[in-house]
Length: 318
View 1 (spheres, rainbow, N blue to C red):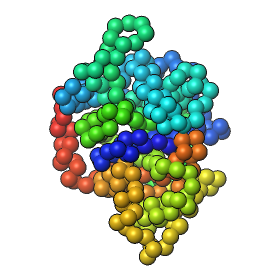
View 2: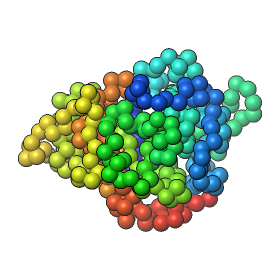
View 3: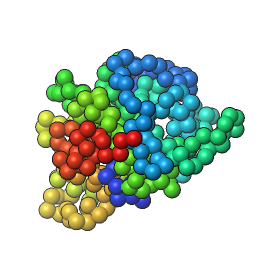
View 4: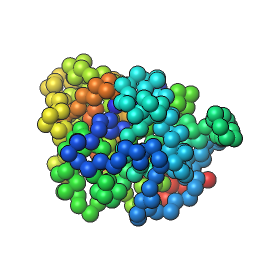
């Protein structure tokens, strides 16, 4: 799982993307739906077209299938061309990052109205420069579950909090020139607006550490294990077949200052917000990363950040 924003930005958060195909035994949305566009999602809340603005940048949900395809092309550029992930057949043929879940997710996009994108056909249009994928629990339940379940056993977590609304965050990326505080803050303003509108109780997903050798990541993984592990109520473990031990060093052997310096800004940002880390990591060789599970109950968010974006998400309201 890639984290291109986290490499260059000290912003709150930058990338939160589950990265592997769901188990073959689970119900999967037919792949062709990911090419053709979106189906209506029962229970969707009517949100304003614009969720926030900073200067020429606007954040909103993708309005149609064409905008979803543009977000997929952005993901292709970042994940596969820039970061050298290994593409599967459908993505390689389409030159877009595609998976079956795209058809049922909402796609948050950041658009720069000061930059024109010229498609092969049609009129020039403002460029999509960032994206985030959002999957609500009621939608996941009707369509085979969450993507994160391909790496982590979240069944107990969902069962313990029956009645709470979960939101999976994924497939986030930003073009290199926009990997700054302003763009990421606008993405998070959009997410916060969405969370409030849908009365989401818990956000979760996978965060990535670069590299596939857990030994080289012993300090970071051990720090998360000893200092950020989820309490029993919010705990979840990596799938047994993919589980990688995180507590590789003793608590006494962990240099906290050095570990924090080594962690991606994504992970540090979520820890500041009040997030917990699940038990066990997962090596994702397709994306050259080691993934950890992050669980962020809305009730645990540091009030400082709620105040920053506004209790009613009005800080960057259009």
